[in-house]
Image (cartoon, rainbow, N blue to C red):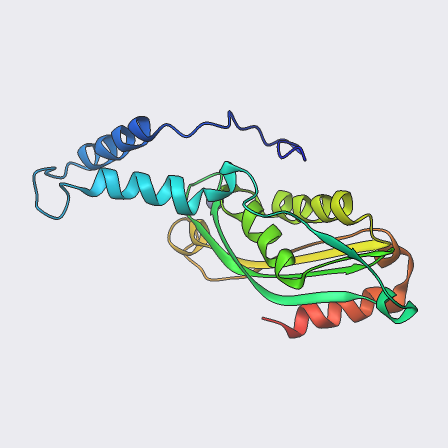
Length: 200
Ligand SMILES: [Zn+2]
């Protein structure tokens, strides 16, 4: 499934040497002494953290969106998961974005494991990101993988680029996207919004 869409491009390669060099330059650029015992191994540690954890989503999905057929009419009601952790990096300042997502869909014959909703969020969050794009990418992925009657995604997050710099204020940014039946059916939309807003 194509990952590079809605303005995001990746070369698909993480260069550990370049990453380490970048952190060496950061330390030097800050005027710090790289021979300080606490900084000696920092470029390697930081490069690993960025490549393998903070940007793990750039390595492609580490899961398969396995689906199974719905067994009864009752299985065609909304499936939702709240309070999914969002741990991301803002593409504009390379500072953390921390929050929660609520993801819901109305099946159209196919269900997926609940934990997969969490994995989809993590996959698109673990990279330099823009919150609006993250929200849409989660919805697009589920739309393509599940062909549901509708998908709804809400993300609420704090941006460290706002809290640690600039205005230096705390605040939650909310983004949401509604597709298919969530757009057409007011009751369903309200049910989702209530779930999402009663989460965190
Ligand atoms: Zn930012």
